[in-house]
Amino acid sequence: MRRILLLALVCLGSVGLSEPAPDNSAAAALAKLASLAGEWEGPFEWTGARTGTGRMNVAYSVTGYGSAVVENLAVGGVPSMMSVYHIDGADLRMTHYCGARNQPRLKARRIDLASGAVDFAFVDITNVRSADDPHVYGVEIRFRDTDHFTLTFLFEGSGKKSREQIDLTRVAARTNAS
Image (tube, rainbow, N blue to C red; front, side):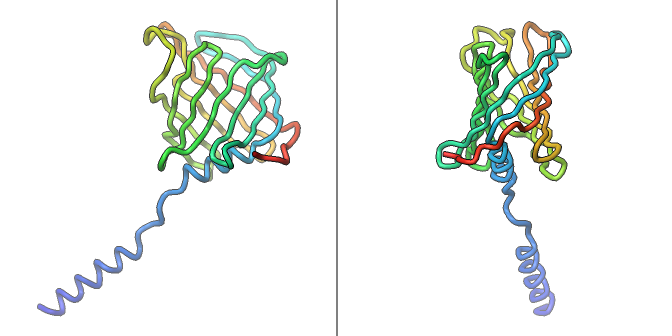
Protein backbone atom coordinates (compact mmCIF):
# COMPACT_ATOMS: atom_id res chain seq x y z
CA MET A 1 0.00 0.00 0.00
CA ARG A 2 2.85 2.39 0.82
CA ARG A 3 4.41 1.67 -2.59
CA ILE A 4 1.18 2.63 -4.35
CA LEU A 5 0.89 5.83 -2.31
CA LEU A 6 4.55 6.69 -2.95
CA LEU A 7 4.14 5.97 -6.67
CA ALA A 8 1.03 8.19 -6.79
CA LEU A 9 2.89 11.05 -5.09
CA VAL A 10 5.83 10.73 -7.47
CA CYS A 11 3.48 10.75 -10.47
CA LEU A 12 1.62 13.82 -9.19
CA GLY A 13 4.90 15.64 -8.58
CA SER A 14 6.17 14.90 -12.08
CA VAL A 15 2.91 16.14 -13.61
CA GLY A 16 3.43 19.49 -11.90
CA LEU A 17 6.97 19.70 -13.27
CA SER A 18 5.86 19.04 -16.82
CA GLU A 19 3.19 21.77 -16.99
CA PRO A 20 3.71 24.21 -19.84
CA ALA A 21 5.15 27.64 -19.20
CA PRO A 22 2.64 30.49 -18.84
CA ASP A 23 1.24 31.78 -22.13
CA ASN A 24 3.12 34.93 -23.18
CA SER A 25 1.46 35.23 -26.56
CA ALA A 26 -0.07 38.66 -25.84
CA ALA A 27 3.35 40.09 -24.92
CA ALA A 28 4.94 38.43 -27.95
CA ALA A 29 2.22 39.83 -30.22
CA LEU A 30 2.70 43.34 -28.80
CA ALA A 31 6.45 43.00 -29.43
CA LYS A 32 5.66 41.95 -33.01
CA LEU A 33 3.43 45.02 -33.42
CA ALA A 34 6.20 47.21 -31.95
CA SER A 35 8.54 45.89 -34.65
CA LEU A 36 6.32 47.69 -37.18
CA ALA A 37 7.53 51.09 -35.92
CA GLY A 38 8.05 53.27 -38.98
CA GLU A 39 6.28 54.24 -42.19
CA TRP A 40 4.18 51.90 -44.34
CA GLU A 41 2.08 52.29 -47.49
CA GLY A 42 -0.09 50.25 -49.76
CA PRO A 43 -3.42 49.75 -51.48
CA PHE A 44 -6.71 49.23 -49.68
CA GLU A 45 -9.86 47.63 -50.99
CA TRP A 46 -13.36 47.57 -49.56
CA THR A 47 -15.47 44.48 -50.28
CA GLY A 48 -18.94 43.39 -49.21
CA ALA A 49 -21.65 46.00 -48.66
CA ARG A 50 -19.17 48.79 -49.28
CA THR A 51 -16.79 48.88 -52.26
CA GLY A 52 -13.89 51.08 -53.22
CA THR A 53 -10.13 51.21 -53.56
CA GLY A 54 -7.32 53.60 -52.89
CA ARG A 55 -3.92 53.99 -51.24
CA MET A 56 -3.16 54.37 -47.57
CA ASN A 57 -0.16 55.53 -45.57
CA VAL A 58 0.28 54.07 -42.11
CA ALA A 59 2.70 55.10 -39.37
CA TYR A 60 3.48 52.97 -36.32
CA SER A 61 5.12 54.24 -33.15
CA VAL A 62 5.78 52.82 -29.71
CA THR A 63 4.86 54.87 -26.65
CA GLY A 64 4.39 54.54 -22.90
CA TYR A 65 7.90 53.12 -22.43
CA GLY A 66 7.03 50.19 -24.68
CA SER A 67 3.57 49.53 -23.24
CA ALA A 68 1.56 50.61 -26.30
CA VAL A 69 1.79 50.69 -30.09
CA VAL A 70 0.04 53.51 -31.95
CA GLU A 71 -1.17 53.00 -35.53
CA ASN A 72 -2.05 56.12 -37.57
CA LEU A 73 -3.79 55.63 -40.91
CA ALA A 74 -4.06 58.37 -43.54
CA VAL A 75 -5.64 58.61 -46.98
CA GLY A 76 -4.36 61.30 -49.32
CA GLY A 77 -2.33 62.80 -46.48
CA VAL A 78 -5.45 63.23 -44.32
CA PRO A 79 -5.50 61.31 -41.01
CA SER A 80 -8.52 59.01 -41.09
CA MET A 81 -8.19 56.48 -38.25
CA MET A 82 -5.97 55.52 -35.34
CA SER A 83 -5.63 52.39 -33.22
CA VAL A 84 -3.77 51.83 -29.97
CA TYR A 85 -2.64 48.31 -29.06
CA HIS A 86 -1.74 47.42 -25.46
CA ILE A 87 -1.64 44.64 -22.88
CA ASP A 88 -4.39 44.31 -20.26
CA GLY A 89 -3.45 41.53 -17.83
CA ALA A 90 -2.99 38.45 -20.01
CA ASP A 91 -4.88 39.97 -22.96
CA LEU A 92 -3.79 41.95 -26.00
CA ARG A 93 -6.32 44.71 -26.60
CA MET A 94 -6.86 47.55 -29.01
CA THR A 95 -8.99 50.66 -29.17
CA HIS A 96 -9.78 51.83 -32.69
CA TYR A 97 -10.55 55.51 -33.21
CA CYS A 98 -12.66 55.09 -36.31
CA GLY A 99 -13.46 57.35 -39.23
CA ALA A 100 -17.09 56.57 -38.34
CA ARG A 101 -16.45 58.74 -35.24
CA ASN A 102 -16.79 55.96 -32.69
CA GLN A 103 -14.33 53.93 -30.66
CA PRO A 104 -14.67 50.15 -30.77
CA ARG A 105 -12.62 48.24 -28.22
CA LEU A 106 -11.40 44.80 -29.19
CA LYS A 107 -9.50 41.91 -27.63
CA ALA A 108 -7.22 39.42 -29.39
CA ARG A 109 -9.14 36.17 -29.71
CA ARG A 110 -6.45 34.43 -31.74
CA ILE A 111 -2.70 34.89 -31.56
CA ASP A 112 -0.71 32.50 -33.74
CA LEU A 113 2.62 34.17 -34.43
CA ALA A 114 4.04 30.97 -35.94
CA SER A 115 1.58 31.42 -38.82
CA GLY A 116 1.68 35.24 -38.61
CA ALA A 117 -1.93 35.71 -37.50
CA VAL A 118 -3.48 37.97 -34.88
CA ASP A 119 -7.29 38.36 -34.85
CA PHE A 120 -9.25 40.76 -32.68
CA ALA A 121 -12.91 40.45 -31.70
CA PHE A 122 -15.35 43.16 -30.62
CA VAL A 123 -15.72 43.79 -26.87
CA ASP A 124 -17.66 47.07 -26.69
CA ILE A 125 -17.89 50.53 -28.21
CA THR A 126 -18.28 54.18 -27.27
CA ASN A 127 -20.06 57.03 -29.07
CA VAL A 128 -22.83 55.11 -30.85
CA ARG A 129 -26.55 55.76 -30.71
CA SER A 130 -27.67 52.25 -31.70
CA ALA A 131 -26.29 48.81 -32.53
CA ASP A 132 -26.96 49.58 -36.21
CA ASP A 133 -24.48 52.49 -36.28
CA PRO A 134 -21.51 51.72 -38.58
CA HIS A 135 -18.54 50.34 -36.64
CA VAL A 136 -15.54 48.00 -36.71
CA TYR A 137 -16.39 44.63 -35.16
CA GLY A 138 -13.11 42.81 -35.83
CA VAL A 139 -9.54 43.21 -37.04
CA GLU A 140 -7.28 40.66 -38.72
CA ILE A 141 -3.52 41.05 -39.03
CA ARG A 142 -1.44 38.74 -41.25
CA PHE A 143 2.33 39.15 -41.06
CA ARG A 144 4.04 37.91 -44.24
CA ASP A 145 7.63 38.99 -43.54
CA THR A 146 9.42 41.90 -41.83
CA ASP A 147 8.49 44.30 -44.65
CA HIS A 148 4.97 43.16 -45.66
CA PHE A 149 1.71 42.50 -43.84
CA THR A 150 -2.04 42.79 -44.34
CA LEU A 151 -4.36 44.68 -42.02
CA THR A 152 -8.09 43.98 -42.41
CA PHE A 153 -10.90 45.86 -40.67
CA LEU A 154 -14.25 44.04 -40.41
CA PHE A 155 -16.98 46.65 -40.56
CA GLU A 156 -20.77 46.55 -40.13
CA GLY A 157 -23.64 48.98 -40.11
CA SER A 158 -27.39 48.72 -40.65
CA GLY A 159 -27.08 44.93 -40.83
CA LYS A 160 -24.56 45.03 -43.70
CA LYS A 161 -20.97 43.80 -43.46
CA SER A 162 -17.85 44.94 -45.29
CA ARG A 163 -14.10 44.30 -45.19
CA GLU A 164 -11.37 46.88 -45.65
CA GLN A 165 -8.17 45.07 -46.55
CA ILE A 166 -4.93 47.06 -46.55
CA ASP A 167 -1.78 45.43 -48.01
CA LEU A 168 1.16 47.26 -46.49
CA THR A 169 4.83 47.50 -47.44
CA ARG A 170 7.47 49.08 -45.20
CA VAL A 171 8.74 52.42 -46.52
CA ALA A 172 11.05 53.37 -43.64
CA ALA A 173 11.83 51.95 -40.24
CA ARG A 174 11.63 54.20 -37.22
CA THR A 175 14.83 54.03 -35.20
CA ASN A 176 13.66 55.79 -32.05
CA ALA A 177 10.79 54.40 -30.01
CA SER A 178 9.48 56.42 -27.07
